[in-house]
Length: 191
Ligand code: 13P
Image (cartoon, rainbow, N blue to C red; front, side, top):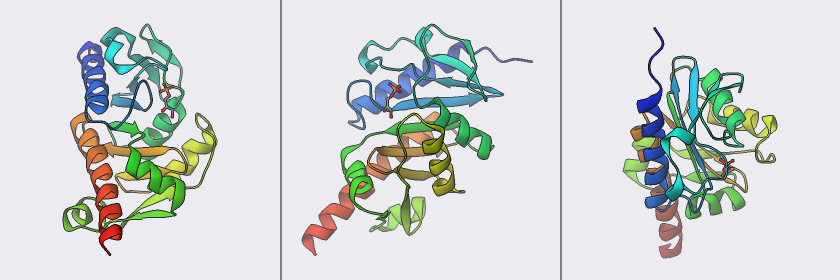
């Protein structure tokens, strides 16, 4: 039986607004999705989160074909569907541009994890995927390869991706990823 997508649209919009409220993105940058059976509910492109309404969240299939919703899907829909196709265990994705983690993605090949809690969540380091232009299959494939079986990856010169079983979990990991990057910077500064 096909589940009603309406509550999921609300949850995606709420997660996207929360992502902005927590300072992980500004304006309309970043994007959020959830997988419901064979549909992906994803934030629309170019809508600032403070104006985002649930009905604008777009449903697409795993090939990217629009199913319903009044907006146009995020330009990063390929990144989202590529991860869902490669990782059936992943049910939610948060792509952010949080500043410390993105700075690492500009400058380093990986984000070393410097504190114990980060180690439990992410392991020794969070990888940076090779650079590819935003919105392309090349970026999607690079991200999938670097993510492997993990729960976070950085996109070179671009931003962050956190994946989880739920929207809440993916958002919490996106926030922990930014905290991990902040701690890495601070600990480097202190020596
Ligand atoms: P969209 O508004 O198309 O989701 O793009 C934002 C973004 O961050 C692209 O990486």
